[in-house]
Amino acid sequence: MTHDAPVPDATSPSARWLEAATADPTSDDPAQWPTGRLLFTAVRRIEHDWNAHLGRWDLNHAGHPVLLHLLAGPRTQRELARLNGVTEQTMSRVVARLERSGYVTRGDDPQDRRRRAVAITDDGRAAVIEASRVQPAEDLTARGLDGDQVAALREILVTLVRAQRGDHED
Image 1 (spheres, helix red, strand yellow):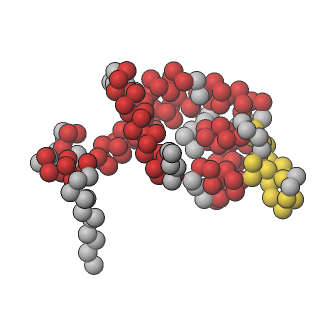
Image 2 (cartoon, helix red, strand yellow):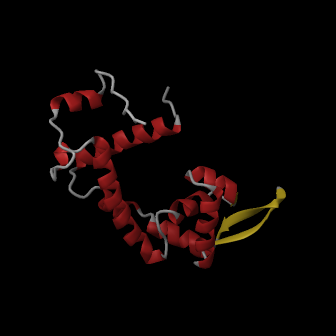
Image 3 (cartoon, one colour):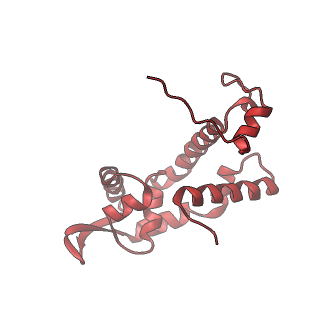
């Protein structure tokens, strides 16, 4: 069985990069790497640094966005799983960890007694607000970039996230 990679359209940015580059995927030079490898490498470094930062509050990259969603009010684990793009089983483990840390509580969902609602505690609110301050997060993700590069990166990332979510700007 063979798995052929899709061939980029000749006018796509990927095709133009492939055409211009003599890519060597085994090279130590990041300029030779495909875009996916560049993104993966950058994300892994940022995730490691971000987890170290969040660790000061006994949080990680999985629990942090859950607390952010709960700032808007209680939600079911099913809702949290959907919002975070994970399975309900994974969300159950994340919520259990947050509960052990004293950041959330689980109770009956007033709209459906068969479900459990997850709510943020005062300690959880304080931790996520402090851990989410903009400047440390920007410092962790923008290391080595100047202001113009940060602005360009943000624009590209917003476009990617919107495209992956199916958002459309009118």
